[in-house]
Amino acid sequence: MVLIVHISDFHVGSISFQEDLLLKSMDIINEMAPDVTIITGDLTENGYYMEMEQAADYIEMIKSPVMVVPGNHDARHVGDQCFRELIRERYGNLQILDGLKIMGLDSSEPDLNYGKVGRAQQAWMEEELYDATQNDMQKIIALHHHIIPVPRTGRERNVLSDAGDILYSLIENDADIVLSGHKHVPHVWMVQNTAFSTAGTVSSLKLRGKDPASFNTVNIDDDYIEILLNTADGKTSCLAKYENLCR
Image (tube, rainbow, N blue to C red; front, top):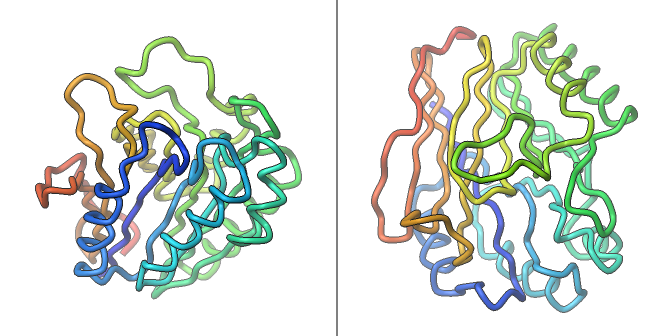
């Protein structure tokens, strides 16, 4: 079985950032000992260098292999340069597990809230998806912005500007799971055989209604794929469970 942790939206530097929630979740994640932890952006509130330094220190606490992609808040105030220096490259990240390829994309645009993948990244993604298919690997895409609008998030303003093209590429190339953050609302959409899973915020009080701060886990075995919602108090609930058609 493969265990993936999906966390998002730290918002370090925001007045709503809660370090205690993040540290509690880090402890739970390290006890889980996942095969990889994927962080889908908005590590910081303003993209400032000091915020990025602090976020990098938190990421160092995670004991599993980590994949990180930037969010729109990380691209503020030349935060893209800070991200490259302190965290890692913004896209082109690959994580290879047993029979599984994870691809990280940068959907951020400097000082803008909406996102864009762009033709260069789209072409790279399609090549990597094709290669994974040829090698009978399951395929996971990680990016910050959601591709399909998320329920209970109000008026839609910040989806990808090229969402239609990216959605088409993902479905045509049989992506298995697409992980994103941005809206702070955990949800799973199924489109044909692809699961589009968004994570909530792991450590911010920018929450809707009674939603708690949370992160997701993805369990992949030979028979099923299960996506679970996890909170800092140790509670879990199922967001989606469906048959694994690729094993």
